[in-house]
Length: 145
Image (tube, rainbow, N blue to C red; front, side):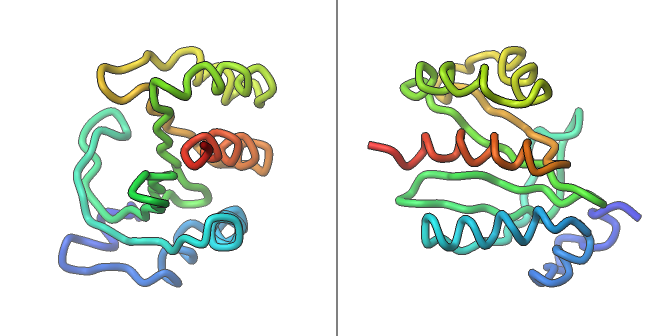
């Protein structure tokens, strides 16, 4: 069953329901990492945005630090998608990180165009620990300085 079919706009999922749907230890690993490293808590919101080759309507989980988005997570069955924005000012540092990433993340990074006013927006399918580690490196750019 699709995420949007389980939890409509008037049916906000609990943290436990999200974790159960995702069925990946990477979800709880990331939550613990974000809490310990950045002292941030998740915020579950209903929204529409451009994901999945069209409009994504549904519940997602956002992590913010100091008014900046660290990532927005989109639950999928067995994994999750993480949307990370790399600002234009952080592109030079991200260019140093990218060659050290997994082939999947590296390819996605280089294929992603720099957008007007926001830099690069990476939508990573977090399906393994290596991808999660790459994601953490890019997120760290959001809180440096």
